[in-house]
Amino acid sequence: MERYYQPEIECASREQIKAWQDERLVKQVRHVWDNVPYYRKKMEEKGLTPDDIRSSDDLHKLPFLTKADLRDAYPYGLVAKPLKECVRIQSTSGTTGKRVVAFYTQHDIDLWEDCCARAIMAAGGTDEDVCQVSYGYGLFTGGPGLNGGSHKVGCLTIPTSSGNTERQIMFIRDLSATILCCTPSYAAYIGETMKEMGLTPDQIPLKAGIFGAEAWSEEMRQDIQNTLGIKAYDIYGLTELSGPGVSFECSAQTGMHINEDHFIAEIIDPDTGEVLPEGSKGELVFTSITKEAFPLLRYRTRDICMLTREKCSCGRTHVKMCKPMGRSDDMLIIRGVNVFPSQIETVLLNHGYPANYQIIVDRVKNTDSLDVQVEMTPEMFTDNMGEINRRQKELVDGLRSMLGLAAKVTLVAPKSIVRSEGKAVRVIDKRKI
Image 1 (cartoon, rainbow, N blue to C red):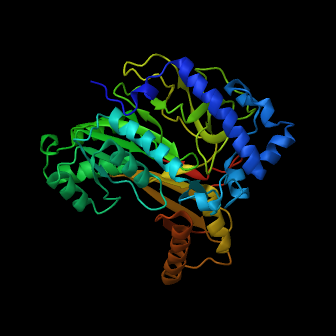
Image 2: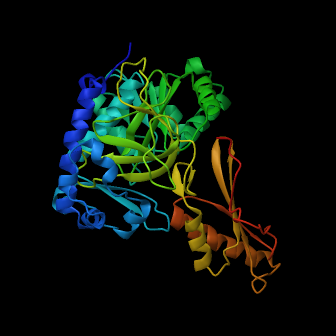
Image 3: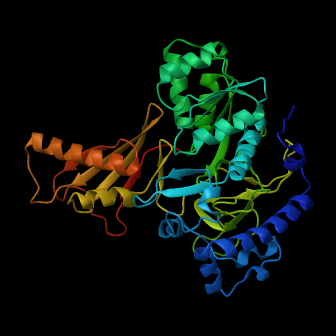
């Protein structure tokens, strides 16, 4: 039996969803115009005023926002409420070390937690369940979002955060956790560790998992389902919009329902910005129509995907998005962390290295690895191993503070990285996604 957290919203008629979107968009555009000079200026440059936006049919007239805008407006330039009304920030790494900082009022947090509660109930969760949240807490949105959603459903919530796998398994077994929330690669690692401990799926109390924050394949889903004896559900979100719960999978597992009472989704041509007809593959753009503190209008996610309004067997009426099929920029997602080659380049240049490097990403034992090979200049070149180790450690530390994760650094001889005729092959991603 399908369960809903807010059935009157999740199963609303298309006419009702459109009416909510029309009314909320008009109100949001006015809110942003009145309170966000940065975006108001972008509207004025297009010759627009709030009166030009009468319904969601006029959405295409509005200017886009991109990650570059978030960087330019950092930290307060896109905040639409007085700071005394904001109660929290969440953050993710930005392209060149400047972080994306998103602001929340208490009302924003309530609505975000509602979205996560919908995802938990779509995965079969009820107030009888024990939900173990093994996403990172702190600035990362994964932990706080699912934690709040779990409370709203009424689950007993175990806020383990990530890491310390033995303790994770101890809690799953001792407290009979039935739902696991974490990144897919960490779920696979937990499953693998349990297998090594000699545990079979029928000795593991889990029945469902809600996994997101990084790309994962259908093969990986099957593998996790078999090892843990669960049904694995996908969840999607961006810190810029709130966090996980922008969309989520239902029992049908044929795409993720977008919470259209809070977000309007469009698919555009990444090169021209033109809105594409439904069913087309293109870049996903979101407008948040209920956020108070940090409302983003037409935010370009850089995720490539498709939308479908085909009737879903679960009874939900909200549009579905497929798994993102790639990016229209060069961002990598490694262990749930956003990594841009430009960030790595910044660290290398700051330490006096030329921008000739190669990033090799792989997945070993279900965990992403990041290996950065860096060319030395002829002046730097040395075969003194002690000196090379010292320099490698310096770069490892620099990358850790820029990216928030550990990378392996290998210094290589001058001219040893292959030069390419066209665009330099900076990234070799060996993961089978």
